[in-house]
Length: 317
Image (cartoon, rainbow, N blue to C red; front, top):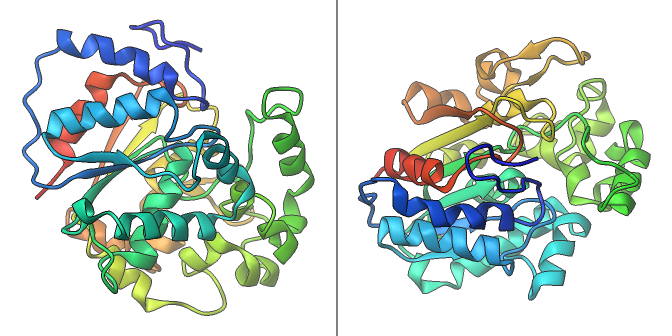
């Protein structure tokens, strides 16, 4: 896959495909974003903050905002950071992410979070667990590009014979009921946001799924999730109209399949987590905090000028 206007190779790993687009930024006239807050970026599956692409894209946001910008890894080096995007649980990744943010004094007064693909779970998890709590700074705005924020119901582009073969084989083996066991949830990051519509009303999902707890779909609810969600001023959700990686891609706009169905698609406002305001999404929407935009192509097919337009238009003070 390539970005049509720049001939950049597009895949979810690594992000060097986006870095190549930085060269075209100079050809576009954009006003610098007026924000007093720094930015944290969160990379996608198979990528790393130590890759040149993520370094350059983070620097581009910093230049545009004229503020500090940093990609926060969950590993100590390229290999560990990449591996932890697979083999460390979603909750554990969020905890490490949050700890590094708290220890960065440049982020102490709040920051914007920009996520790519699976990186959405770091921004979302931080918002729900740490946002403005016990000395952790607040996420002011969250820009989610082609995100897994609502979870996924499958992994259609995961080829067992491809680059991520071993991981894809594990995902295939962990589908269905096996996903909703402690062993399954402790195996792969991706399983932790796997939401199978045929299992969401079963006790196993409600008691073991990390995503179920985040959604307040479990047997108990945590009202602090709603309180923390309300502290963020803007949620900008960018959907790839031809996304073949995030399934269903309506999830990039907080939608999902109806319970018990892989055919009936629910928009955000039709989901139970919206109608019952399970984690604060409806409250945020009614306050005008949620905005939507699209890109025309496949997963992570976007240009740097597009990204900087979102930054300029969606970062709110």
